[in-house]
Each structure stands twice: as C-alpha cells, then as structure tokens.
Length: 299
Length: 318
Image (cartoon, rainbow over all chains, first blue to last red; front, side, top):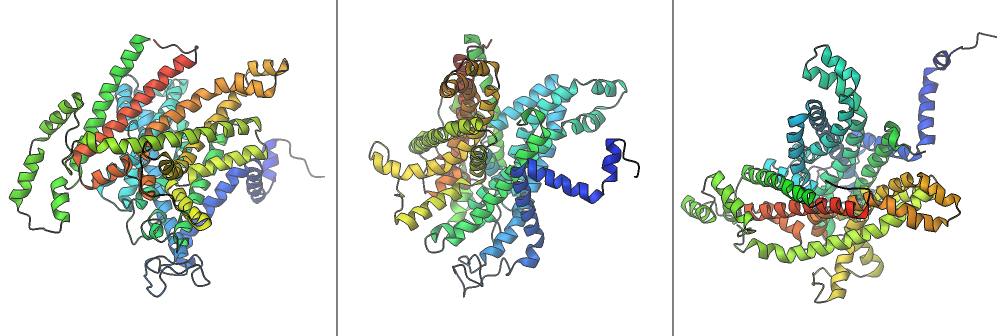
C-alpha cells in the first residue's frame, strides 16, 4: 500500500484539481440552495447577454409593420411590440443593457464609496466629521429623486444613467465601509505601517482597503440588483436608456401599458425578466453576506 | 433630554442648508430654464430674445445666483415657498392637494407593509431553516426584486382579464367618497407596500432570531410559559424596535419614492408633480419638493430616536 497522506494539506493536494472544483460547487449548492439558485440566474443572464447576437431570432431594432402586436406564436415566441419588434429578441438584448448599467453603476458606486469611507475613517477627526455631514445631506434625498436630478443635469442615455445610479450609492457604501474601517484603523498593523513611515495613500490603499473588502463586496452585489431596478424605473419614466436601444424598463413604457389588455405579452415578459434578474442578484448577495460576514451567519 | 432634543433639532439646520445648496446648484447646472421650456416646446424658435429676457426678469432669473439663493432662503425662513415658475400659482397651493394623495397612499402602503412584515418575519424566525422559513424568505426577496410599477401593471391586467373590472382611474378624495377612493388607492398601496414589507420582514426575522437566543427567553421557556406568550410578551417587544425604525425611515422615502408607481395608476401625487416640475425646469417647485421630502426624512429620523428612548427605558440620551 502506498504511503497514506499525513497532513490535510497533502490530502487536498492528492485529490485531482477538477474534483475539488466540482465538490466546491456541490458544497455550495447543498449548503446554500438559495444562493445557488441566485448564481444560476446570474449565470443565465450573463449567457443571455454574451450570446444575444447569436441566439436572438431577430434584429432588436428592426421594425416590422406586418407583425405589429402579434401574440406569441412559433415565429415570435413571446410576441411582438407596437413596432412589430420581437419581444424575445429585445429581452435578450435588454440583458446587455441591464448588466452594463448594473455592473457600471455598482462598480463606480462601490469604488468611490469605499475610498471615501476608508479615507474618512483613516483621517478621522475634522475630516471625518465634515465628510459625514456631507453624506448626511445626500442621505436626505430619496434615491430615485437624486438619480432623476442627475439625469436632468447630464441628460439621458446609458452612460449618464450609470452615473445617475452610482451617485446615490456612493454615500450609502461610504457609510457602511467607514464603520468597518474604523475598527481596522485601530489594528496594530496599521500602527506598524504608520511607524514604518508609509504615506497616507499607501496605508489606505494597501493596508486598510483589502481588510474591508468583505463589506465592500456585500454592498456591491446588493447594489447590482438595485441598480438594475433603478435603471428599469428611470427607463420606464422615459428618463433612462432611450429608444431604440433594447432595455427592459423601456419595453414596459407607453404601448405596453396602453395595449395591456389586447397585447399583455408586451407587459408581462420584460417585467418578469427584470424581476428574475434582480431576484438572482439578491439571492446571491444574501448568501455572499452570510458567507463573508460571520456575525450575520445563521446557525 | 430637553437639551438633546434641542441639539438634534439644531443639527438639522446645516443638513437642510446643504440639501438646499445641492439642489439649487444641480438645478442651475441643468441645461435650459423654465422660459425656454415653455416657449421652445411650443414650436416657435423665433421667440424674440427680448421677450424671453423679459420673462426671465419677471421670474427673477436675471439676478445673480447668490441673490436668487438668498431670496429663496429668506422666503424659506418665513415658510414662504414662493410661486411656481411654470403655473405662477403659489407653491403651497400646488403641493397641498397632491400631498394629501401621496400621504394617504404612503400611510396605506406602510400599514399594509407592516401587516405583512411583522407576522411573516416572526413566522420565519420561529420556523428557522424549515420550508416555511425558505418560503417566507423567497417571498420577501421576490418583493425586493419586483418593480412596484410592473406589479401595478400586472394587478390591473389581472383584474381586467379575470374580473373584467378596472379600478376607477380618477382620484376621489377620501372624504367625498371613501369607497371610490379606496377602490383606486388600495392597488398602488399594495404594489408599493409589498416591496416595503420585504425590508421589514427580513429585519423582523433577523431581530427575532437574535432575541430568541437571549437568556431571558430560555428562562421563560424553562419555567413552562406558552410559546405564544413568550413570543408576544417577551420576544416581540425586544425585537420590534429595529423593524419600526427601518419602516419609519422608509416611510419618509415612500412620499418621494412613489414617483414611478403614480405614473402607472395615473395618480396626480407628489411623485408625478416632481417629474413634471423637472421637465418644466420649474426651479422653485423642484426646490420646494426636495426641501419638503428632506425635512420629512430628518424629522422622522428625529422622532424615531426620541421614540426609542421612550419605548426602551435602557436608552437614555444626553
């Protein structure tokens, strides 16, 4: 008999790489079934966005006036809209808009928010006080109103919508990250870094930021779902992504409500797409929070 | 305590001033103003520059920015919001009617949300990690994921197809015809309330889980008290504070956050007014609405803190 592995380390090394990779997934599915459902929904959305150009049966922006408001059929699985555009195709392409805006806004919001939060905690004193007062001002605005105001300044369109959605997220992220960073600041290794004569930038970026990564990740995933929802709301109001770009919120606007009685597929499917996407990100975000934050872990 | 209240009220002033500066500056950065919004949309690009300048002078838009700001501020200090730049009517008049609608809707939505959230949250906590818990969690996460405006569309559609009935799309004040009023407002209140209940349910569940692990709960169980009594008398009282906090903070935002749902149900509330005011570049009206919502938010924040000390004798402010 061959020598049996002595340590845990050897044990894990002796197992084939692929098996470990698979067993990690199996573990995740078994212990966090809801998180796994979320991850599956996210994966589905990413695949939709990546392959929209290949699998979509029609052109998302081509009008077809011979097939306006057509119901679901073998040609148009989910029917067509008031311009004769295929609803399924537009939902597939819409996932690109949703992902782009969601990722863009949450990346932007989390980056700036966490930098402000960590810096505010690190410097403390008067800087911290002033930053907190400024954050209070932003908190007094409902999210959608701040987003609407930013859109009014910058104008509509996907790029500006990303900025408009990121704006209200920055103070929210900053507040959460700051409270974690306050604890990190008191750690001996920060004192050590300061004693070694490192500059503020280096301590903030290299020593503090990596240690508050867990709350940042939690906030960023929570933002993703919220950003998709907010983009849909803005587009629904006509103040977000503009026609003829395919966006889920935009598909619910105008004709979808007007013709809801005769052509309900126009209103049902894009809304389902929004709900499923946000649902997926929320489920995944919840399990991520449970996994990363031991204080919130359920028994 | 009196000193604490005074201190808190005083601390609101710089925040509100910040809000005022922020919205003032944001609005002035927006391309176009109310005069352009009115004349250029009427299709006549040949409006004489003179006429437009006259209009601007009438509205005080020709003044330097600092002067416009101080005029607005001195008005606010006297609780005078001024006139709407678009309609010329006093802003208090413009807001009054719509405020009643939005307030009623916000109260209804928030009541429905609590009716859903508190029992569901308790249920999920007591039955932790069973299928009941999972079902409640999925239900509440779905509530967070569903856009309330789409839920509103689906409700109308459902009633139309199943009952061949559509809620009346004309608003009647509660005191004129309570039945008609509720028949319309219950739907948007449900659509919005479901979403807000999700926040409360999750909070209720986690707060309850935390409390159920406390020693005094174990003592209560050990001496053989009914589970029902333990839950309602011992656990709920201790777990409900954070839930009420979250829900009351959401309440202030409900007032401003109904923006999209009001469109679906064609409700002429504050949200609709806000969107219109922004597209008309009606500076004074947008400013007034933002200040209103911000003040509401800060006041509710303040009352929640005071209520904390009142409900929970362990908390004392200095």
